[in-house]
Length: 262
Image 1 (spheres, helix red, strand yellow):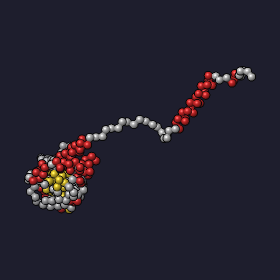
Image 2 (tube, one colour; image 1 turned 90 degrees about the horizontal axis):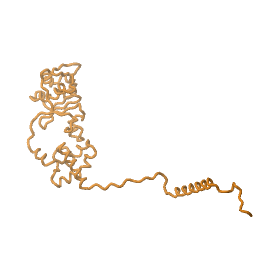
Image 3 (cartoon, helix red, strand yellow; image 1 turned 180 degrees about the vertical axis):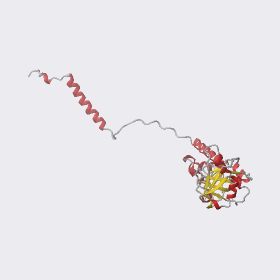
Image 4 (tube, one colour; image 1 turned 60 degrees about the vertical axis):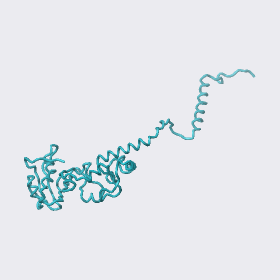
């Protein structure tokens, strides 16, 4: 035997590289198959430290203070229309803690509201004093309005919580409501009440306001009766240019009248 080999049997550099590549691919495949789970792997961000519990409680108390400034009294149904962080379930624990510290009072302050009610000692003292007998009106969608609160006593008296509805108060008494910009009027005072012209001030405002005043107000019914035959028509005629048309009463601004606002 000799050591002679045919040229084709000799290992060339390219042949050695190809064999090394195949060996490397096999090793990588074996290494990849050894993983228990398939998919992409990435580094998770570092865990955030837990919030300080005292800071969380103080934040909730601050939210209660905001709500107290807004409403004066807090109860479950009132907060149903608030954003999630300001609803009853989120602030109730803070209310109880603030009750223990004397910052708020808990009790049954108003009839017809089920469950606990909370208010500040300052608000409670205010309720003990006599309210001024001022006439004012507000939009049904105003934050101070109770329209839309799911309490039976409120739902029976209040119109829907939409911008075209209005409420008129004399002190603490609700004396009139308006729906659909005056189309449906409801008065809880007699037609000869001496304050009735003042109660109609919101209608004068709708006709005479600087921003987008109404050209006219069409009244369909007053106290669930046709407006044209209502005993309140005389007061409307004294305060506005009023005319009957098609069973409705149409009001126009009386020139020289003074506008009032809420």
